[in-house]
Length: 283
Image (cartoon, rainbow, N blue to C red):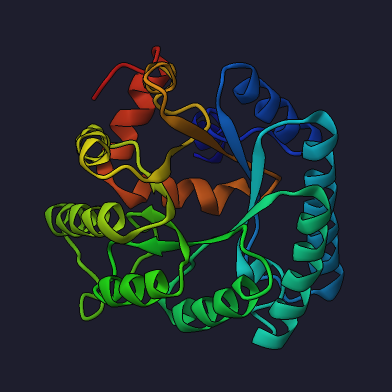
């Protein structure tokens, strides 16, 4: 089963190494797209492993600057210390931000499961006060997200809107595709009315079409964000229409848990992947 899943996963995972990720970022750059690089891994408690992860992000940012690739990084808080303490995570984020300032690189903070939402938002506020080229992901499957979004926008936050990939309790999360989609649309409308700089992270044609329509009424600085290897036929069409498109590029050996979440996140992802494997037809 693992071998089969790896055959699928390599469509959206760059490879094991930093160089694999940078190669994918360069391909995106040559095709007029930006890139967002994420080192796979989460819930690290070993300080040796955490320090190694921080250093890898520093290397990525330096390489993006030297190669003049339009790119960003995306960091999971639990991979740099949140599983130990908020203080440990914040300390390591500060190290990453110092390197980001030197390399002029945008940094995204990934959202994780709901048990960490409050701490991650608090970390974002602390860091955003020091570095404005910083964004945070919010998840449309959580019922609390509209309130979080309104608070974040009041502070001028930069937002990545995702549907959400973590298994959550029905008390705090929407459980059906219809409810999640409805909330995603409503949150997107808020972003186009009140947002400053944001990413629409989706492969869903209906959401992409809605974003295009909203962008005609409300001119905002935003970009479409899609996994490497997914919707590769659509991406150049969007670029041709003058939209900014970023490839989200995961890399590393910890690909299994990530890939299982991607497949489980929505049944539609399986269809999207199948179509992408045969030239990325519109679904």
